[in-house]
Length: 233
Image (cartoon, rainbow, N blue to C red; front, side, top):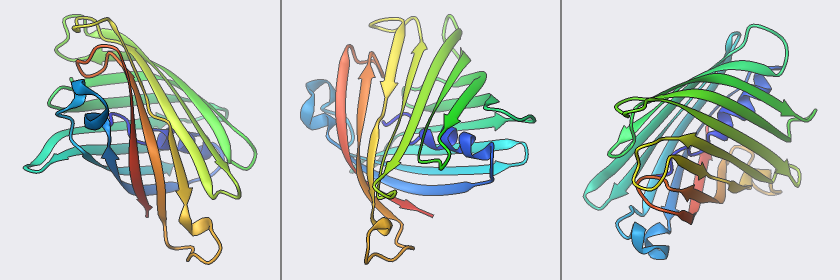
């Protein structure tokens, strides 16, 4: 499962909400190559869909996404994440509240932290960093931490974008170690930015690279690319 999808949206949006309101929704479909590349992932589903929503308001922003993995018999796994940025002041810092959960292997987690976000003047590139306290339900030592960094960059007159996030957290009691790394850089080509394509044809073609270390019960480093389509509403 692509745990995180385009988490970047909430942090890029967090930057935007400092100066203006915005909203965005999209649906993605990813063809996963993990089962072809690694014996450890031979049972990994080939198809993942993601639904995302991001909205701002006068008190901050709300973001959520739902990932679902599919086998021929139906949905094999599901994960969802919802986050709220709270901001009642001027500046680049906001409060962050988040919930993560899923099935079959993701434990319920509740997170509280602070987001620091920066972007350039025309919002074509930026980054954010969020240190968080993380309560992992059912873990024998539930009080942990997570560090999340995100970035986004548009170039070539917004025809292309490079976005991504990296999560690093402590989760003791696993089979391989106490720390987990998950990063998902994505590259997209936005078709409606090309001459001759209707501006309302909101299809993007791209790829994601899942970089994980000691994640989801598997030992070591894995690099798993996908082929992806995205429609923005």
